[in-house]
Amino acid sequence: MEHISNLACEQVIQTDQLRKVFKVGFWGRRVTAVDGVSLEVQRGEVFGFLGPNGAGKTTTIKMLMGLIYPSGGTATLFGHPVGDPSAKAKVGFLPESPYFYDYLTGREFLRFYGHLFGLLGTALDKRIDELLELVGITHARDLQLRKFSKGMLQRVGIAQALINDPELVILDEPMSGLDPIGRKEVRDLILRLKESGKTVMFSSHILHDAELLCDRVAMIMKGKLVACGPVSELIAGDTTHEVEMVIDRLLPEALERIRPLASKVVLQGERVMVVLSSQQAVDLALDVIRSAKAKLVALTPHKASLEDLFIRKATGVHQPVEARV
Ligand SMILES: Nc1ncnc2c1ncn2[C@@H]1O[C@H](COP(=O)(O)OP(=O)(O)OP(=O)(O)O)[C@@H](O)[C@H]1O
Ligand SMILES: [Mg+2]
Image (cartoon, rainbow, N blue to C red):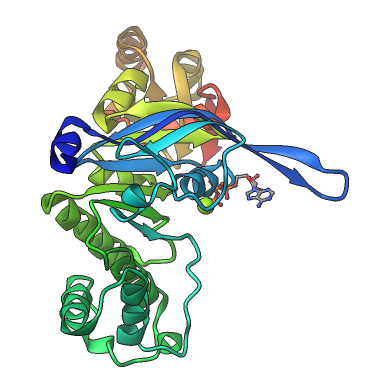
């Protein structure tokens, strides 16, 4: 029966108008950390939960984990209300700042969490060895956590999140504090989890990682979702199809004719880089370049990225920028 309902329910996480208001300070000032967030995470996908500092990512995740109660709205895991033990047993969680008992060794730390899930004996030892291998810290299994580097702590934290072989893994900032190699390794690990059929939701403000990894992302700012969908669709929907031109020998008078057409002008020594946002602007700029006998050095369609979308959402509109480098 359980099996049938699992198959029927493709929505692993579902929130509807989820809200959290904190009261802070002596006067109980209200801070709305999460403001009506509705999202769905499907079985088997890698879902990125993106937003700047203080956007409400951790608060949302804590509500999903049943660690704090929503002020409004609903959230379900595997179709059960959050906090339901049958759902909790299928979830692994890496908190944002995991409190590590730093006198324990890697192996002891994982044993501790294994016991919390009722795992014992040789089955647990085997599981721990597998996980240490999976996250690449077998060599540190007998080292105390206080001697671990930040990257090693992040890995043992991820191993901890996997101890109960969960169907859903929720990771709050799994790449934080890692160098580019460490980040790549965590990305690879997340992809391996996906390959093994798990659903992964992770929060991050490192947009590049999300772009490389995620089937879909949601962007949260000031507690509200500002975008949600597959990365390619979000970028396609948002892009203004910008073209970047690098021009040599452009006299000041010609530059002044191009400037009103451009969304960005950067003076680079003798060269000028301009960004144009429409085909018409490109055609007009090319006319100016030809008539002024300037030299077009490069013409590059600007690939939109999640970062562009993120900044655009954060700042409202795309501002023309001028800079001298
Ligand atoms: N326990 C709390 N009491 C009062 N305010 C809180 C509490 N927890 C979070 N907040 C506030 O809620 C807002 C959202 O915080 P949250 O930690 O969810 O952001 P975040 O997106 O995870 O940020 P970061 O990227 O910095 O981790 C912030 O304004 C924060 O100050
Ligand atoms: Mg956070």
